[in-house]
Image 1 (tube, helix red, strand yellow):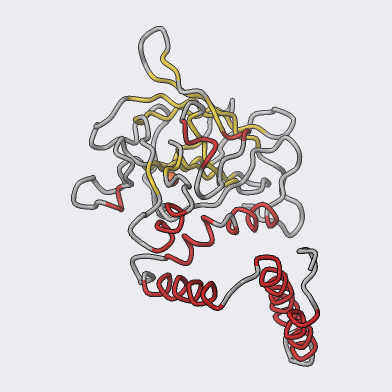
Image 2 (cartoon, protein in one colour; image 1 turned 90 degrees about the vertical axis):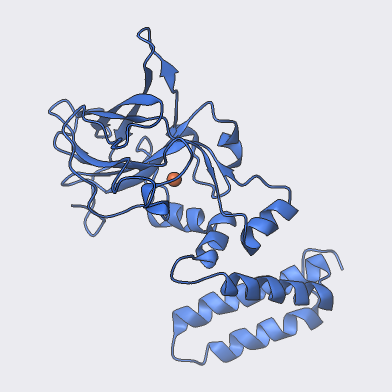
Length: 287
Ligand code: FE
């Protein structure tokens, strides 16, 4: 066995699966499942999978199901931490060169973030290190996009979103909706976001730990920028100095999404970012 191609005997079920599924009513389902089974045949051969490995795999997947409820989605966390969500996101929402990359929206977005005037703060409880975030919205040619809706949401200094601890943070703390001015700019007042870890008390967190992988997400703010005639942009902006920047467990970091958080002469922590929107094409996600 050369390790690249499954021997015939391992491949037989995959071949039979494809042939049988092709006779069914759903061509897309048959193609996707047959491709997965083809890859599984290769995984079995290349890893020399044993009965014990299969038992462990089934035990793990069973636990993922047991940890999923209305309050918690361990399957989504598994898809995120395997990079699957980010890969599908990138493939589904290709951006032209120069446009700000799209990322997954994450589990903490909430509809209805309160409208904020330019320069107003989204920190309702006033806790944390003040941050002034200067955002600019432009098109691919660098021309300002006026009247863009800029939604922002972030964790507090302890790395917690308001909907994770409704008894400790005011509702809609660190969430807001701004509109860009005629020069495309938006001034957001907030506090420095804390980094936070993906849940470690379930099977996915334990798996990452068993692999020696980090659980911490680099500090970031989330944004969703919409403007008529442009593709909607959902993204993160990361603190470039965060040591976890290179090992985000959900693979949302892109070099173009990092910015400097630095103290100006007046001692205020500042960050700036230019969101570059791509024009919507026919049939694409636009507003
Ligand atoms: Fe986040």
